[in-house]
Structures are given as C-alpha cells and as structure tokens.
Length: 359
Image (cartoon, rainbow, N blue to C red; front, side):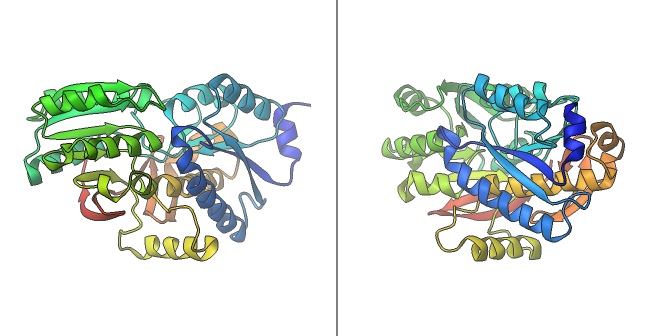
C-alpha cells in the first residue's frame, strides 16, 4: 500500500508541527506550540479541514539535521502526515524541503532570506524587501541612521540576509561598514563588540537567534554601546526581551507582521483568547509563536480552496486562497502571503509600534 493510499484511509488530517524545542531558538518553542494548539482548536471548531478533524505531531526542528531529515522522510513515507507546518531556522527548512517536495504541502511560517521555490512550499513570513529594507529606510528618514554594522549567527539566514543588505545598500544612501558572524550557541562577542566600538556604525543589525540575541544584547549594553548606537533585530519577540533583561533593551527595534500591541479587532481578539486559553503562566505571545497560528490557517485555506490535500490541486487554486486571522485578511501571492509589516521599539519588556512599513 502506498503512502498516498495510507493517508487517504485516515479519518483525520495529520500535520507535522516542526518547531525548535532545543538550542538557541528553543525559547520560541512553547509559544509556537501554544499558538498552534489554539489554531487547531479553532480549525476543528469550524469543521476541520475537508470535514475531517486535524491532529498535530510535534517534531523538534532543532534536532541534528540528519536526524530531522530522517524523521520527516519516515513520517511521509509511512503515510503518517498530510503536510508540514512550522517555524524553524532556514538550515532546517533546507533539509525538510527535499523530503516534502512533490509529496506533501509544506507551510513555512517565519520571515526568511527569500528565494525559496521548492515544489509545494508556501511561505507565511516576510522577506527582506518586505521587512528589513523598509525598516532601514524608516530608520534613515526618522533617525538619520545611515551606517550599519551586522552581527549574525553563522548559517544561511544571517549570511544571505547580510548579502542582500549589502546589495540593497549599494543602491541607496545606506552603508554596511562591517559584519561579524558567530556560531549558533556562541557566547564570545568580544571581537564583534570591539569592532563595533571602533567603527563608524550608527546602528547594529542583529541577525541572531533567540537566546544568542538575548546574550548579545546583554553584552552590548554592558559594554556601553547602547549609549550612542541603536539596534535593529529581525528575530526578536517578547521572550528575547525577557531573557536579555530590561537593562539590555535601550535603543532596540524590530520589524514584523504581528505585535500584540497592534490595535486591531482581530489582533486584540487573538491576544485575549490566547490569555484565556493558557492563563497567567502562558508562554510569551510574540510574532514568532503567532506565525504558527497563521501557518495552520494558511494550510487550512489552501486545502479548502482546492478541496484536496493533493499538491497539484493546491497549486492550481492557491492564488485564490485567503483567510482572516490575527494579522487581518491574508491572501496568497505566488507562494508568499500579503500582510502588513510594523516597526516597533522595545519599551522595557514590551514593544511600542511606531509605524506600518511599506515595501
């Protein structure tokens, strides 16, 4: 019996939820799982997907890459899952896509470096031209920040985003004056801090992951570099603020498609239901966790629009898929979604939204 026929015999729609449960990005795992759980409850309350209840199968997307590859391949080959949804690092995405391509749909929920075109992959998150570059233009216009130093982890997303930023700067009045990359899980920031301190940089671009970003923010503030330089980070949720501590948040900004502090009926309703569902000790609600809610709504919309879980059927009708979620009305354009992007600054351990960005 083939994997397709095994999937067709099940009475549920089964999805792998690939989120980091360990490593530097592990701090985001609880909010991802909680947001995904709320999404499944909402989807099932509305009748499920194709009139079938939906079940999640969490997997650790921060596991060693060969282990992650084998795990996803086994689940697909055994007909155990109908799709993959999740927030995880680009190095994990690069080993998942060869397993899902041409076999099952895969919804990747995070912002990323751009350029993904694997068969059957749909993207919730923002690309640099939607998120980073408008933020840099806003910083230039509002604060006069022109010269930037890049600090990132040493893997695909920071490296490729840094490359794209240099290309962007060559066509603008923004300069990248230097870059340093540190290993995932690394804590030796001395060289980077010295280079920043001796540079002409007015701002620092942070392409760092979770706990690594929080640790760098503490070191940056302890070195006194926050007195005259701002920071713009792309992977910063409230949990990064908590981990770094209030003293590390001065002059810290980020940009993304969701903030709990955005005043909108859909966003406020989601925040209230999240708090009611998970209580006072709920994982910090942030853009990263919320993206998993969006990803599951997107998967449901794609399947319902096609009236099928088949990749080719979804491909034919994807451009008509739409849903309403915490970010408002979301539509599919190509393999990406359209959504607003906001720029916010840290206000102690919370964010204050300053602007809606335009790409």
